[in-house]
Length: 120
Image (cartoon, helix red, strand yellow):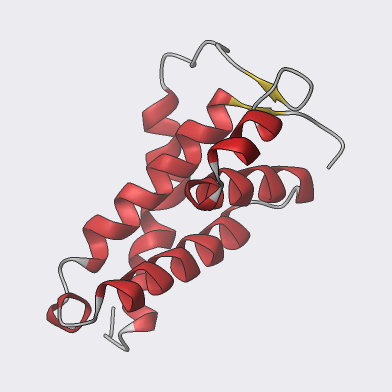
C-alpha cells in the first residue's frame, strides 16, 4: 500500500460493518447460524462490498485492513496503528455519513440479498 491508513478509513470500515450487520439481521436464516458462521459471513460480505464500492486498490486494502483489525492482537495493534502507518485525528467532512450512505447502502442491500438468494 502506498499510503497510510487513517481514522477516516476506520470510520468507513465501521460504517460498512455496522450496516452489513443491520441488513443481515433482517434474515432469519442468518440469525439461525452459529456465531462463528455469522462472523465469517459478515466479514465475507463486508469485503465484497468494499471491493464493489471502491476502484482504488490502496483504498480497498486500507478499508479491508481496518475491517479485519479486530483480529489483531494488542501487540499487532501497536505496530499497525503507530504514526508511521496510521494518521489519526483527520477531520471528517461535514457530510461524511451522507457520502458513505450514498456510496454503500445500495451495494450492501444488494450483496446481502444476493447471499440469501432473495429477489430484489
